[in-house]
Length: 229
Length: 194
Image (cartoon, rainbow over all chains, first blue to last red; front, side):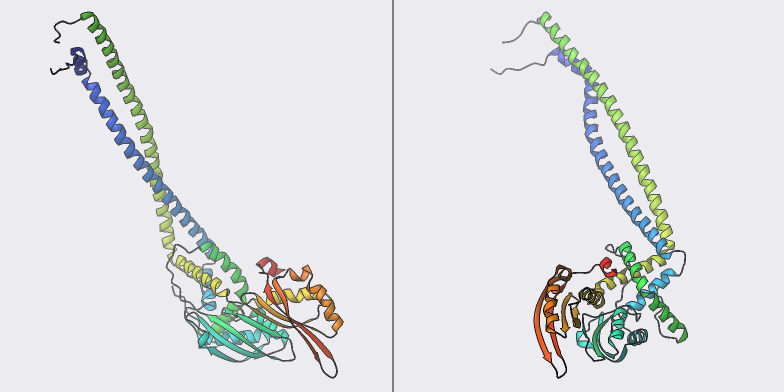
């Protein structure tokens, strides 16, 4: 025999009487879930936006303070700095500036460069290898070795240097000149601050070279590349 | 079995119990609503503050961008300089840095009267070095070994070995030469200045 269970009539009455409250409770439950999931996504979205904006602002502040420091009091100081770097590492190889650099070094140090050979075999896109022969006493050669990196107005390196202090006044050196075309577009990996700190150190070493080349540029019309901007 | 009668006494008790539960439910719903409203109010305030912060940061960023836009040309120059400096740092690694290491060796040799004369010096970009010391007398050369083996001399090198000994004599004089090969300890800028 099938048993049917009847709902208590009192319970039925109370349920009907409190139906509004029960509906409100269900609505509150649903809105709690909806509200908190909405709030959670909105708060985390805002938080992400805030930290991104704070980072952006920090970067911009940094950039602005760096620009202020780089520009300094003199509006032309940045142009000057660009010129220093263009002289040291030109965008394209410039054979005349190699001649000029070697000549300047000769005049500065007393080490007379009497011949040079461009070694295309050891050269690459950015590097030009030049074998330099010169005469001078060991003192002038040492002076040359002290000056060759920046003294000619071009960045020059030598991978291997040999000094024999015998009674010979002829010396041979393998020098490398550099050129590199760089764009003025920003890159995330570029650290202005470190680069500028390094530049300040470099600037103290090349200040004379720039002055020399500027004098030549005005008095002898020596070709110097114009500002690319 | 079909129920034909209602027990009024026991059902009244049931009704009172159920009614009490429903009273708790009503109070609970009201409390829940108030608490939820309070939480919503707090979070809405927090969200409002957060939105204000976002707006103010956006304004700030806009101001900086406007200022930097005026200095766009300067920024391009700064980028150009930075890239060239990076290239310079890379290129400079190709340099043997002759003079700092030559001066270091020369100065160290000068501190000893038995060290002889530096007659040859070769260095490459990896700090690998070869050098020769010359002596007029054999006794001086033998005495120099004491100095060469001292910490004062060896502290400048990662490794150093004697590779050749040469004795030359002409009609008027004798000459002794010892050759070394090794690798210098890396000089930092501070040491270089000293």
